[in-house]
Amino acid sequence: MSIREFVSVKDALESLSPGNSLLSQNHSGSGGCINSTYLLKLKNGQSYFIKKNHNAPSDMFREEARGLSALAEKFPLGVPRPLAIGREGTADFLIMDYIKSSSQNKTFWFDFASALAEMHRSGGSGNYGFSSHNYIGSTRQVNDPMDCWTDFFCEKRLLFQLELAASRR
Image 1 (cartoon, rainbow, N blue to C red):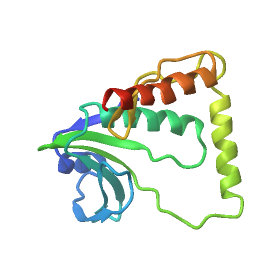
Image 2: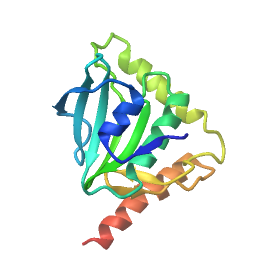
Image 3: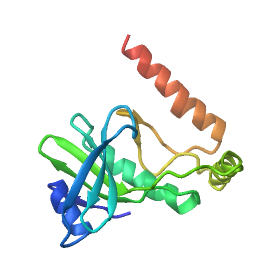
């Protein structure tokens, strides 16, 4: 995955859609509890979703972009494509495709669960984890590969979080 870095949102948008300018930036009520999120609309009708964070670890959005790219390769149900990252002033940002919500069909949750299970099954032995560490919120998430999914989940997810919580008491 190669994602371009920019020094401003304006420069990123110019690169994504040359010759167009920002028409509106509307606050989005969804997108996580630690980021400010916005729907960006350009004059040509193109829309993007952006996350901004003034206190993000320096590699948080880069790792999120890496994870989204990996998910998009294996998960067939619409993962936003990361398009640009950067730092503008004191805020880091991630720009990605805007996926318009729609009504769910009757089999949505069944299809979602089946696709998620298949994605996890495709990892195979020795491949539970990820190629880099990332974040859950702004907390580091360790992804060292392990042979057994239950061992990975217990050690890298549950135990890591318990030890982190205990160290902050």
